[in-house]
Amino acid sequence: MRDLGPYVPKRAYKLNAPIMGMLLNGVHDRHEGRVFVLQVGAGNGEAGVPFLQRFRDDGWSGLLIEPLPQNFAQLDALHAESERVAVLNLGISDVSGNLILHTLTPEAEARQRRTPRGRASLSRDRIAKPGIADDEVIATEVPFLRMETVLQELGVDSAQVLAINAGGHEEQVLHSFGSARLDPSLVFIDSVAEAAADAPCIAALENAGLLPFRVEKWLVGIAPNRLSVPLDELLMFFRKGVGERQEDE
Image 1: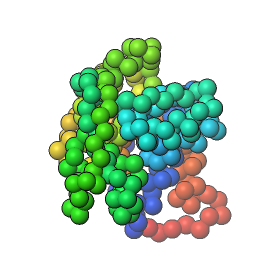
Image 2 (image 1 turned 90 degrees about the vertical axis):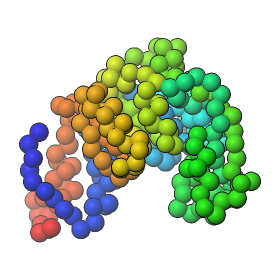
Image 3 (image 1 turned 90 degrees about the horizontal axis):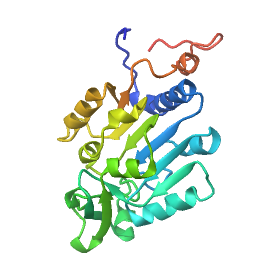
Image 4 (image 1 turned 30 degrees about the vertical axis):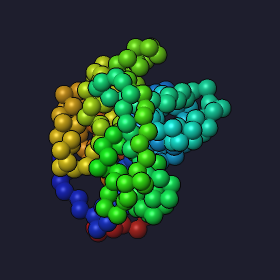
């Protein structure tokens, strides 16, 4: 990798969406559209990493796993007509068994305007923030399996894209299988910078031979020399097309 020097935009957050799009375009082009997504914590299917359009329009396939029943009901309905996308209603951890998942009541969730809808966690403290009453936190018992068990049962031995959003349980998900054997080109992990679980997640990416980067809330692992870089999109985004107004910043 050759460092081209620093670039510090005035509003760096505006780069997140196009960077995500370029990453997904890069893996699409590299694998000629034959992309399989393994997603843990898929939610209702319409938030997080923007996979929905890829499933609908670009021919991608996937296994989407979501533990929270109300989220899963929406996810299942979203892909009910798809022959390329399978959905499972269970949790993934480094242990198998029934575990307690915590989430807010609909009324409490409605008051938390900045909190993503359908947010859930095995850690009650991640959900019961200040101002939330005890009876506004719902405890739901959910079956959890190790990922290696699920993959073996379904015969999944590779995935071009891996995404994990497990409500603070990402490290345990990674410990439940050997992600390197799936040989992903691109990995997304929901991980807060400098949080306790962030360093182990970074280490897991590096141990799998992936280069770690951070895009918005996502810790992104990129397999070296495995993405077709959409340089034309990159140049057009930075207004370097012929006749485009050039920017100094």
